[in-house]
Length: 147
Length: 92
Image (cartoon, rainbow over all chains, first blue to last red; front, side, top):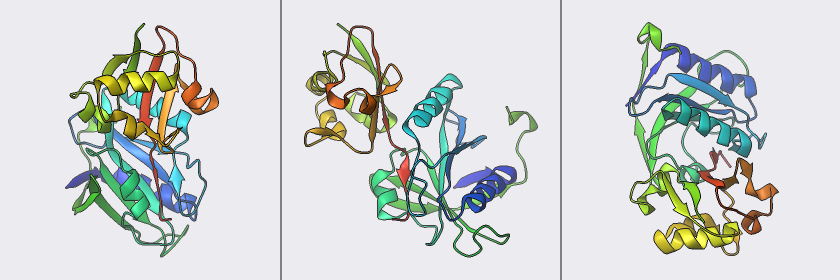
């Protein structure tokens, strides 16, 4: 199960809507071993594409260094699909390389840049096997975690 | 000569769980052969045919090796090498 705060959930949805029809991508880091997604990092989609995303390689290195320095790890790795459902594609499955992370997919196909509900789903992707999991949106966690 | 190589989570099955290992080589290609000698199987995860795999990033002292000669990139003692799988995907 993925447990995520409402504010983080909303920020991911807002990012996906803002970047539509390009695929939005990013990460929510959290303390190592905590399984708590606490720090959202929007990433630039270096591919700038409606059907593909990739972090810029320099941004990727900086992100991992920063997480290392802060004793964080990737808890959520998210991206949007702008014309298809919020389910991992073959590409998503083949390229998934963080077996400990929750892979979140948001689909903006219904409302694009406009207000309205989106599909927001979460998966584990390990050794090519996709397992969908429940998403629980929590009103708020401990107040001091917003560091 | 010793060069520290940072290993991403997904490849730590080859290094007995180690986050960083030492290897040596005057080029990235030689370094990967040295990694393979101690951690059999890891080379295939980094190289496809004669090239670096498209969705594997390797950095030497924070420089993406694709900008400094790829597998022929030069290494010297004390350099730091980081391996990171690309974070990529999409509906395509």
